[in-house]
Amino acid sequence: MSDNTTADLTGRTIAITGSTDGLGRALALRLAAAGAQVIVHGRDERRAGEVAESILAAGGPAPQIVLADLSQLAQVDRLADEIATRVTRLDVLVNNAGIGFGRPDAPRLFSSDGFELRWAVNHLAPYRLTRRLLPLPQASAPARVVNVASAGQQEIDFDDLSFDHDYDGVSAYRRSKLAQIMSTFELAADLTGAGVTVNALHPATFMDTTMVAETGAAPQSTVAEGVEATLRVIADPALAQVTGHYFHGLTPGQPHPQALNPAARRRLRELTDTALSTKV
Ligand SMILES: NC(=O)c1ccc[n+]([C@@H]2O[C@H](COP(=O)([O-])OP(=O)(O)OC[C@H]3O[C@@H](n4cnc5c(N)ncnc54)[C@H](OP(=O)(O)O)[C@@H]3O)[C@@H](O)[C@H]2O)c1
Image: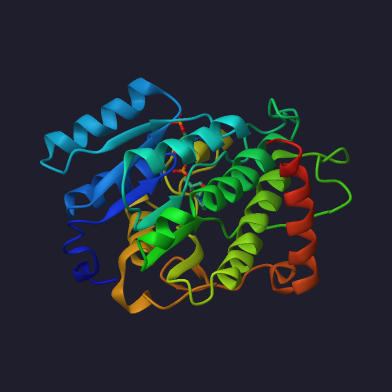
């Protein structure tokens, strides 16, 4: 990506979930430096406030701070409603917040709503947030939804979404990330002609972030590489009409075959909608 793609984002409003650490934090600083009004999302007021202060100290536009624990669907709903009352436009929603593999041998965890935790935070939360917020980007068209997924994908077992059998954190993460990509393709199709593009990407492999450190694995790439790839999907004019795509870094990516199976995508959508309909 040439730096021209983010040369001037003045007047654009961009929400980034999980902007208190790693890729999201670096993106928030970079987008604000390019003139965007950033909506800093965090689950911790102090950490979100520090990011906002860094943006202001660097001379960026005053950011908005919104707080929500994305493992709780009631907070996801409140987050969407709060963003809609705080800003009059939303040019880009970046669904970046996520939980990684966890520590090796960590036990299966559940959200307070009763869903397997990685499924809840990495798939259900962005699915719900995006749909609830959608009128705002639609009213701001042309707009973009950017889902930060991963190259680490694993086939979803629709008969065991709670991961009752053979749980491990790596597989749970990979299933949730595949679900994110499948949902990207579905929403992009729904929004054909609506002026809102929806794309997913793998930002970079084993960046030097908290979730990678937690696994004990050695970093293989920098956050700056992930920022560059994500910025391209957020702001590159050349991608203005591109929707329903999965990128691997700066190049077109090949998702897991399940993502290319329309019946599997429909099944995921039905199961997701049913699960979410029990939590209104
Ligand atoms: N790191 C990699 O190599 C890599 C590779 C492929 C894809 N990705 C994807 O890139 C995205 C960012 O990852 P990262 O490496 O930057 O991770 P990170 O440094 O661990 O940051 C994760 C962010 O998500 C937030 N978050 C986690 N659980 C949350 C919850 N329940 N509610 C609200 N916010 C929550 C964290 O908030 P706190 O600051 O409060 O913890 C933090 O802001 C993720 O979607 C990840 O799957 C990363």
